Image (tube, rainbow, N blue to C red; front, side, top):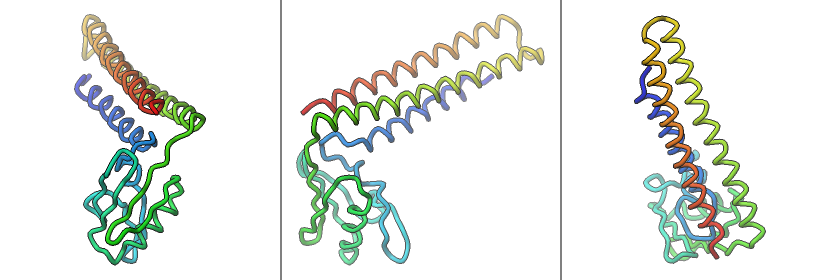
Length: 184
């Protein structure tokens, strides 16, 4: 039984969850709102993400600025952002695209909080699955007489501690994201 492997798997779940939560709009301008949008350019499709087609920054809490590396694809960028149907309205301004982030209504904020809770519960389920697999591995090693009873108890306790710590981190993520969403 490798505790480091279990811990790495739990950390991966946290990273994926963090990335996923970054795409939930909070009414503030954040590059994560548009960086994964797929754009048709150069006879193919590419993500808008920084270092592929453009840089993405924010002028103020309500405005994103997308600056393409190649000005000839600015119209494709605009069309791609509009086609992504994420509720953003890109406007071409010389060699860059400005995106005003509209304020969220109270109803929309509550919908997004529900979505965040759903995503976080999915993360908790994945963490419990990692724990379950680790516990199965411990039992398998015990049944194969690779480890003794004392080791089983110690390893199970350690896996449970890792699980509890990771669930606490998910709960903390939940609180922060909900506060961010409900702040006007």
